[in-house]
Amino acid sequence: MSIDNLVDPAVVHMCSALGDESRWSILAALGEGDASASALARRLPITRQAIAKHIAVLHEVGLVETVQAGREVRYRVVGSGLSTVARRLDAIGVEWDRRLAAIKQIAENL
Amino acid sequence: MSIDNLVDPAVVHMCSALGDESRWSILAALGEGDASASALARRLPITRQAIAKHIAVLHEVGLVETVQAGREVRYRVVGSGLSTVARRLDAIGVEWDRRLAAIKQIAENL
DNA sequence: TCAACCTGCAACTCAATGGTTGCATACAAC
DNA sequence: GTTGTATGCAACCATTGAGTTGCAGGTTGA
Image (tube, rainbow over all chains, first blue to last red; front, side, top):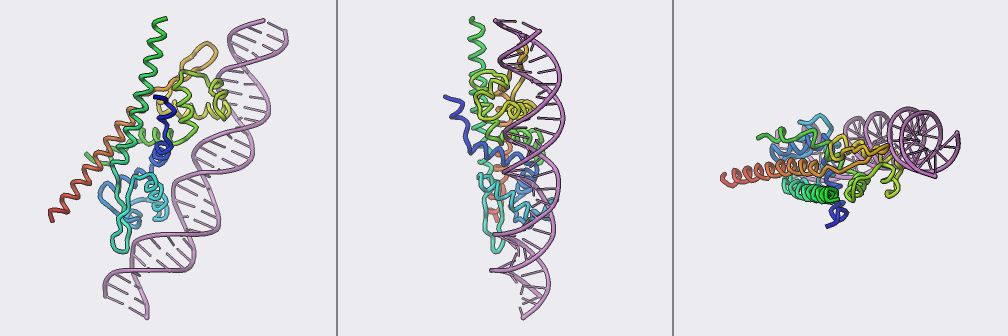
C-alpha cells in the first residue's frame, strides 16, 4: 500500500474544516442538541452570518446535516463523519509506523 | 462525559496542520524515508523556505521529528501522532452518536 | 395588517498564511 | 582557499478566510 494512495482530498478538507476553534464551538453547541443558526448565534460570541458560513463548511464535508423544522433550519452533528476520518488517519499513521519499523530493521541488519 | 471536555486545543491544532495539501505532500514525501528540507525542495514544486515553514508547523504539533545528520537536518514522520489524534476524533464521534441515539430514544418514548 | 421573527445574499474590513526572493552564515570537499 | 551546498532569518506579496454590517424576502402570530 502506497502512502500517496492514503492521502485523500476528502480527509484534507475534513481536517481543514476541523482546524478552526469556532467550528469546534459550533459542533460542541450542537452536541447539546439540534439548533438553528439564530439559536446558535445567541449562545456563541459570533454573528449568525459567521455561524452560517461555518456550518456551510461543516455541511460540505458531511459533519453536520440539516433538518427543516417549519420555517427554521436546524442543524445536527453527524458523529459518524468524525469516526470515518479518524479511521483514515489511524490507518495512515499505522502504515507510516510500519514502514518506519521496516526501515529500522533493514538498518540493523546491515 | 461532556462534549466540551472532548474538544482539545491540541486536536484543533493538529487538524489545522493537516488541513493543507502541501503539508500532506511533505508527509507523503517523508513517508518514502527521512529527508532534509533541501532534498524535499528538489522533489516538491515549492521552495525550500516554504517547506521549512510547513515542517515547522508539523513539528510543532508533533507530526515530524528532527534528526541531526552532520551539517544537514533530516526530518522524520511520527506516525503515532496521527494515530493519537485519530483516537481522539473517533472518541468524540462515538460520543456524539451515542448522545444522538439517546435523544432519539427519549423522543420515541414520548 | 403589522410586528417580530428566521433566513439568505452581497459587499466590506482585516488578519492570517502560503509562497516568494534576497541575503548572510556555516560546513564539506576539491 | 574557493566553490558548492545546507541552513536560517527577514521582508515582501497575494490570497484566503473569519467576521462584520446591511439589506431584502418569507413565515408566524397577535
